[in-house]
Image 1 (cartoon, helix red, strand yellow):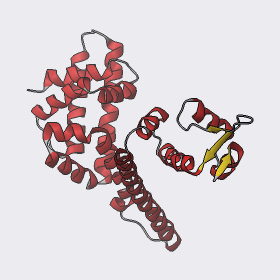
Image 2: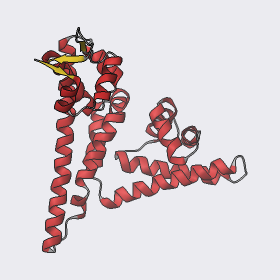
Image 3: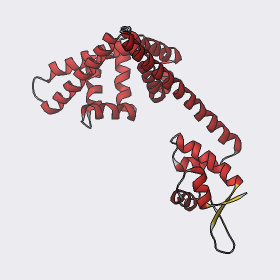
Image 4: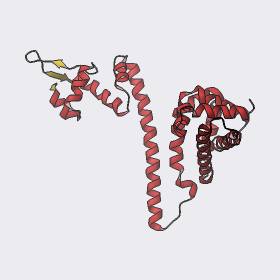
Length: 256
């Protein structure tokens, strides 16, 4: 079977402009009719387009998709399997949130009170997944898989009070670093630095379930070595050198 660009557009929901762009960047090359050079597509082209649409739905960048399409079939299949696994995980997370909403609605209708820990279960599971994707590999490399699993287990069992305490500690760290960035080298900065250190130490203990100053020192190094941690604290505080400032404070008060 062969199809015009309009027919492919109608079939897939993609605009003709998008299809022309895919042709121009050689992501999906259209064939041309001999008589008028109109774009046409065959069934095998639609197989490729289906894969492109799968990967775009998974937010894979176009240059990466193009590279994958040029690789062998086994590599492409492997990528699709990997992305399917991510979708299945996302599906289970959404199912957990939907279930939580259903329980909340039912309880409100019947005048029942949900257990505090249950209220936030689905959200904590989502946070664990997010942290695992961002930092899990670094934690495994530095501290081993057991450390990652223990931290995740601890996080999932946090009470709502502990969760709020952790948020308050992070807020104190943020405010302290903002204050220090405005104080520059005034005489009273040591008190503020110690407050930042103590708040961050408490946050670390709450979040990981463990604490020692060697571990704290190692985290300080990670904040300046890993650009994701650096960006997180710089954005949190609103200052470009916030992560470096925090790292220096931790190193000052923690024993390596």
